[in-house]
Structure formats: structure tokens, C-alpha cells
Length: 381
Image 1 (tube, rainbow, N blue to C red):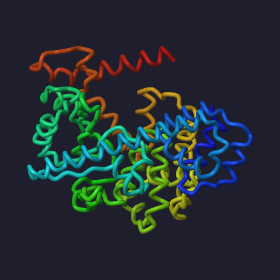
Image 2: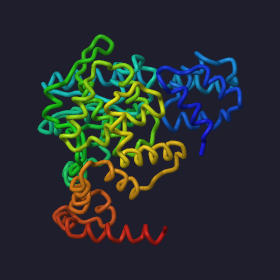
Image 3: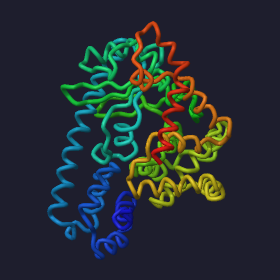
């Protein structure tokens, strides 16, 4: 279960590491190969290097030092290249008078962590208005990006429910997630996109101002995203923990009220509980009190911690079921199920490739395909 190594990783991932605990853990002996693998899996190698260098670098084997230094240098260089690419693309959007914002990776590193090198990320998340998606796609294609599925009609039929498309540049290796919604169709989510656009803030990156989510909106997004994905990566908890440490001006009671009105308070309470428990982040007392008194949130937190420690894949069905448990109300847990049954996906096409004029048939065949898939999973178990 990677217990000792994961605990050391937690000590090193917090913004305010306790040197005594780290030295004591290291003195008992560490499987450095295991902790390097865990740090890579969870996307926190820069945080591990930062803390070990500050606390006990002399007690870290030279081979481990070299691997951490190599990964740090590689991550820094790649992140800088991504910054250049983001600014280049945003200039192209501005030339076409297309409003755009970015969030997650670069913004978290620059404005929350305060150091571009401290956050590992593998793509750019860009959000635009739905009416501008086709124009943005044309700009991305003109700049060397191709969608995973080139046919626009295909994307509209089988991918649009996700509220995002993935684009990749084979020459540079860069990836972009182009969003026009912050959640998939049918999911209860604490953010209304219209409100998000009206509250955008600007962050200066290398002399250029870039639009991004306001910190309170970012907090709600990170909590909802991490909860929906089962908090499988420690870096997502670190992101939320950094906000708790750095953004002391956030009105957490107002944020909780917003989450409750959107029937998504579980995700915010869970994020606060995990950041407080795992990283000793300064949690708002009202939120931590509600989280600790909520048995459903406690159960989700226990499940998330077990999952992070084991790093074992949960499987597609379990991922979906985990997501259902994050909604406050029963009817909101039923919406994703109804949407799942009524939404065409790439899997439907791959299971039975029909010509375009017959794509509407997938609405009828999908429930039967899902039933067969569920039965097969039950038999295998």
C-alpha cells in the first residue's frame, strides 16, 4: 500500500513542511525507488525535490538527487514552452476578437504556487464561448493542432456532450483541451459559465495579461473536478491546499453557500477535508466542521485516501459510480445515469460503425450496449 513512502510524500508536498517529521521518516529508511514512482504518478516531483533540498538533501542518495534534478529541469523547460505557446495562441484569438481564458496548469503554477516550475501539467486548458468554438478550432488547426477526431460532424455527434475537445500538435507534442463548458452534460456542477465569464480576472505571465477564473470560482472548480475524478492524484489535493494557504481573502462561508445552492456542497467539503487531513492546510472551521459531521463526505475522503495510496486503476464503471456519490441530492445522481443512457459516444460508434445518415440509431442501441457491457463486468467479477 506504499504507506511509509506515501506519508513522506505528504510531508514533502505541503507548502509548509515540518522538517522534524521528514528527517525522522528518512532516518528510518526509505525505498527511494518507490517514492520516486509515487511522486511521478501523483505529479508532485517538483514539490518532493523542493522540500528534500531544503530539509535533508544530504541524506538523499545521489542517484535519487540526479533523477529529481533531471525531472525538475525537464518540467521547467516544458512549462516555459507551454507558456510561450499559450501567449502565442491567445494573441491569435485576440486578433480574431475571440474572448478566451485559461485555467488549471499554467495559472495554478504561476499565480497559486508562485513558481512555474513547481506544478507538473501536460496540456493547456482553454475556455471559449460555445458560439466561437468553430472559429477557435480553425485557429488551432492553422497553428498545427489536430483534434483527436478530425470530422466535425463526428465530434458534434459523439463528443459534444463532454463540453470539450482535445487537440494535439504532433510536431511539438503540445496538447490542448478546448472547453466551452466546465462539466459534461447532465452533471450537477457548482459553477454557471455565464457567471464565470463575468468574474474573470487577469494574471500577468511574462509581461502579458491572461484571463483566468477568479480564485473563488477556481476553488469551486478544483473541488468539483477532483471529487468527480475521485481525487486519484495527490497533485489535485496540493492545488486546493495551496489555495487554502495562499488565498486568505476568499470568503469560504459565501463559497459554501454557493455550493449548497448548486447542490454541490459535498465536493467543497471533501476538498477542504482532504487538504486539511493530508497536507495540514489551514481549513475554514465551518467547512471542516460540516465535513467531519457528514458521514457521506467522510466515506468519500476515506475512499480517496485509499485510492491515492494504492495507485491501482479503479476501472471505468467504478469511476462513474464514484462520481455519482458526490452529488448532494438523489435526483442529481440520477441525471448522469439518464444522460449516460441517452447520449451517443465514441464507444457506440466503435462497437458498430454506421454511416452518418444512420447515426440517430445509436440512441436506440445504446441502452442495450450498456446493459451488455454491465453484464460482462459483473460476470468477470
